[in-house]
Amino acid sequence: MKYKQIILILILCIFFLTGCSNSAGVETRAYVVAIGIDEGESKPIKLSLQIAILSSSDSSSGAQQDNSSIISVECSDIDSGISLINSYISKQIDLSHCKAIIISEKLASVGISKYIYTLVNNVEIRPGCNVVISKCLASDFLDNFKPVLEAIQSNYYESILNSSEYTGYIDDLHLSNFYSKFLSTASEAIAILGGISSGEPIPADSAYIAGQTSIEGKNKIENFGTAVFKGDKLVGELNNIETLCHLIVTNRLENATITIPNPLDHTSNVSIYIHLNKNTENHVELINNYPYIKTRAYITGNVLSLTSSLDLTDAETLNMLNTSINTYLEQNISSYLYKTSKEFKSDIAGFGKYMLPKYLTWQDWIDSDWSNNYENSFFDISIETNIQSGYLFNKI
Image 1 (cartoon, rainbow, N blue to C red):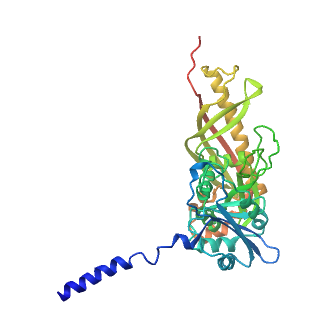
Image 2: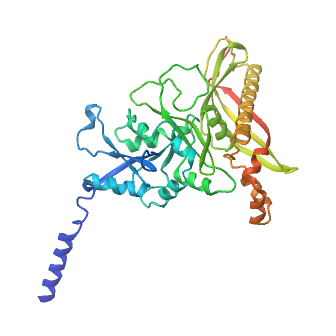
């Protein structure tokens, strides 16, 4: 009986003690969905945290609510800022659900290596967190964040920044990608370009970046284009068309819609839904120590526009469309590549990785100074397009 009583007591202890320490875990934590970093006025940086407000209210009523709170503090570094905010609020800061890191353009142009090291070193921040360079203050970016079709902010950040899969206007970039490119000797880092919509009219189908579109809505933030880095400093930006070209060259294009002049009627345009038919081929060699880079891309897709001037059952018409698309993409890709090499001097396409295996030792590669030699590159671009009509039309 004595042993039975001891076993019974042990079983009761297990039931009573299990889960007690974490029973209020969710209620005691403040979950950050986005981090904003700006230059400070009295301190080196201004840290802003967008914190989700957990609510048990019924979201099916359709009522629009502010389900997040933004807290900012000027501080010497990110960790001290988090500690200061922890002392201010009633819950402990938790970064495990952070989906976006917003860094102001002004701060990025000075250099952000120490902030990236701090964020990567934080065990709570996940590698899949997106990096956004904001053309406005990061705190203003967060203030204007008003999700329209998502009730949970983290879901919205994740879905809107994944629009690269069907627009080609941004690259799907994460903290882990940014960090690896930042450390690489064969490529340079890029980030998503963000801003606040101006709401002002712009010419139809023109090239633009974040903050320049005429989109109107409750949510004022937008993500278009790419922020280009040289080392840890922001050196330039790519518009939506240049970003699409970057995705083609780096073999990352999923789907996109382009608009070109109608080859049979110069008063109208044709919209075409494109994607890669097979992997883009890149070849790099040195000629008199000048990088000679050849890019071959293979595009396929469907015509979206229907006009009386386009007979999509006619082979000659489709050939003219293919030729027009080839010319359009070759010109834009050439412009994009020369912009990165001559103006930005930044190998964001990672052409250096094609040269790296050609060196016998690591020191030989370092001595080649690829990062600085990239600006001497010249390019040969070729596009092979196979566009078909969206439907099969029969002549009457």
